[in-house]
Length: 63
Image (cartoon, rainbow, N blue to C red; front, side, top):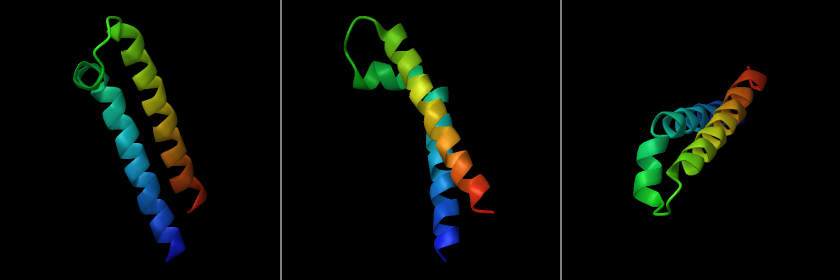
């Protein structure tokens, strides 16, 4: 049961990370209102990549 919950959590984290990478520009336009959006977009893409890697590792180590 716990294994299934961790796999679902890993899938959700991976999906969230990919969405953050793909829509980083739109998210920064909506959420932040400071001048340099390129740095915020890069930061959001890096955070999305790290989150998706954590989710993938959760899935990998629970099989």
